[in-house]
Image (cartoon, rainbow, N blue to C red; front, side, top):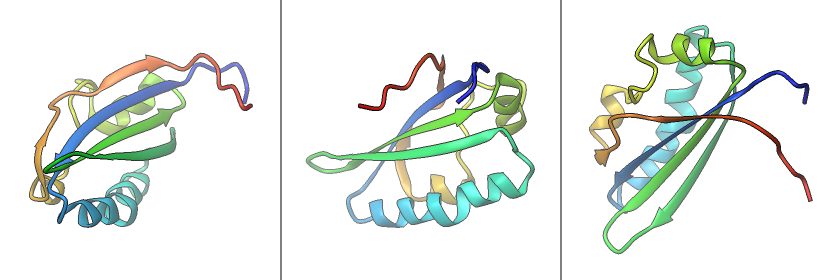
Length: 110
């Protein structure tokens, strides 16, 4: 990886245990392939993590972008706004309205 600044975007959403596989499949096969088709070239990788709770499943998404301009291409000038397609809103029972952004510093592979 070169020294170019990268942006890490994080977001969380929750769904029922029954809808968790549906939502995960939607992310993998619909949401992010559609994002790439729309020309968001700076989205380098997406990590999908889950945590099963008593009555729901939490999804924690980490997106890595090559720069802040690519984040803005993804969601617009108000880049802190969460990106949640309408079909995903039907599966999620709650979600964060905004995303957090961090400047990527280092990755240690041990």
